[in-house]
Amino acid sequence: MVPETLARDLITELIVYLRQRQADTRSLVTRQTCAAQARARAVEDRFANCSVRLDRLEARLDRYAGQVRELRAITQMLRAPHSHPTRRAPPEEPVKPGRVLMRVENLAKEIGGADILTDINFEIFEHEILGLIGPNGAGKTTLMECLANLRPRTSGTFYDGDEAPAEWNPRSLMFYLPNGMAPYPELYTIEVLTLFGKLFEIEPRQWERIIVDELALVPVLQKKVGTLSKGNLQRLLIAFALMSPQPLLALDEPFDGLDLHQTQAMMDILRGLRAQKRTLLLCIHQLNDAERICDRLLLLSGGRMVGIGTLDELRAQAGLSQGSLEDVFLTLTSR
Image (tube, rainbow, N blue to C red; front, side, top):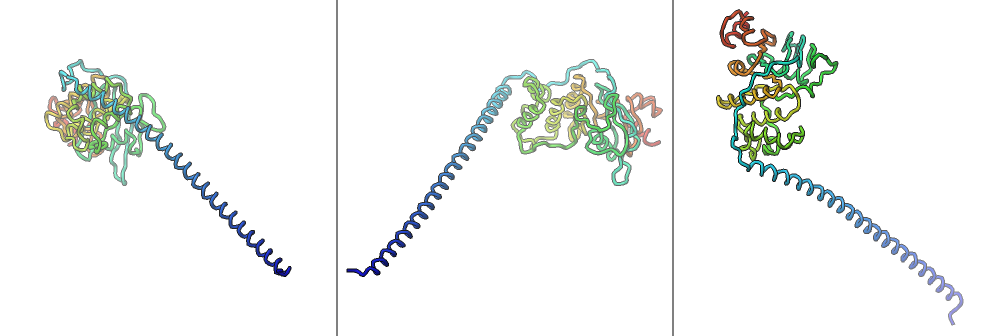
């Protein structure tokens, strides 16, 4: 028989062994349970991510479907015959200037200690075309940028009608188009026009009238903005002005880079805007263009006003019984 002591030792070792196995088994089960739970959470996370991605994809598909419907409607509209793809502004009775839309008093602007604008005073009347006339460096663009609140004025007061707000914000009064702007050059013309049509909440019929009838942009709708000629780019920019709700349209050099025919077409468009009772402030470098399109003219030289009024009024200020705008400008600036 096995001695009693030896038996107790064997039983003790067996108990220790069984306890160790039990602990190892419990640890293994715990690890496997944790791993299974982690896998389950990962599967749940992947499922949740897939659900989110599917929701986003569904939203994009809905958006694309809406764009396809819009493009299909535009394509049908463009394919429809138009008896007059281009038309000149119809002759109408001149629109008489109305009330004072904006008034500028004692405007001054300094940049780096230099006087860019000094003692500028004028009014803009409803339904008129007022031209800012002067050579390069006269301060025309700076004046426009001050009016548009793109440059802070050094001094002076701006009136919106009869009110002079403490903080000048012309957003609801004035739509400003700087010279040489090419918005979204990588996009197609039709995409940019559709974007601005939605931005300004233009009705489809009005959008079609502006694009097809008034500006004749149909041939360039499938061209990228960055590839447009100067004349077509100017027409695109004018389309934004036509869509805008502001009563005052300020255009910097609208005839820049245009040939004779393009200039005449642009003048017809601008006269059509005035006939629609819009007010225009045009920054013009070429005096003969200004003489043909403007109702009144503000002459700038060296940042100072040298005259304002109709051509006849400017002739009287210059002491001339007749003569072109160039003659008047040379006379007034030589004093």
